[in-house]
Length: 381
Image 1: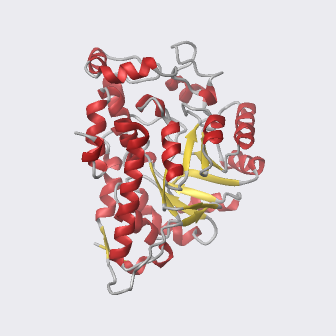
Image 2: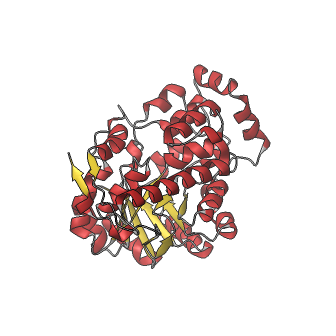
Image 3: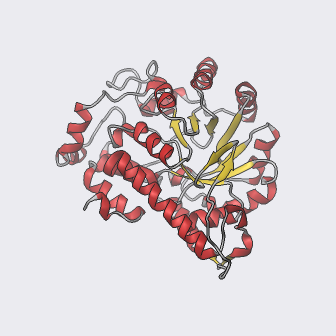
């Protein structure tokens, strides 16, 4: 199977599975507990039907959107995710190059594997910083200042990870950073030698945003300990309000699932929220992001930019979310599998296919621009 044989999300997933050692693949592919929410995230879109209008004289299609002050050529962006150079040795640099080519947003995580500065110097496409809140307030302040100095446009605070989700696939393989593999996990790395060759022959794996705090050689701090010992589970709305004030710019809270929390985000001055259940990787049994979208848009959509992620695999999913009032949608696995399969070329192919799907679907819907999409063109079963 080659990259040119990939025509959708499932094809990219298959190719990534062939090329990645099983522990790494399952880290991307897995969810929490029984993975109920993971499955429901995409299934939710299947309970909603599009109602097209014909003979609308559709000639030119404008897919652009403006969200949190950033103009995107397409209404889907690459959500910031951790550990990208573990999936492909170019990591965030490959994703940034692809995002810039397609004129969309991408992000770097606190657990990113390329520095904020390196990414910002190389790409001018809009960038977000996915931030985790630490017990050490001084560390939080210095990391925010670093992001501001680097020229990051949007601060995106992840608020649904005060503790790690129960990802049982990782427990079975022994996946962790640094690696602590089971015997079967070791065997899975041995039968995928190309990944290992790339891992050891390219730049050393590191976490530049946290290189003074997390030791990748297996020393004082692992990723697991980072979440349990360094992140602050007692973070509250007052803490976030202080961050908003200090950042003094586009500030987004990622992980909102209730109307009450969406209203609080508005009250403390956030400019955006991401309705997200972390791709089904945190609280299993929680509601899908798409199912929560309408009521949150109804409550705060005129006061704050509402975005959603989790479960996006098709252009029609994007159109359904936009029709309900989302300003844009984010995706993680939709570009991580292509990244793992083929690096920058894979991410570019995924974004290109998604752009083509959205354009084709808008034409079939009889819409020339995103603002023509509305709930009138949806029906729920």
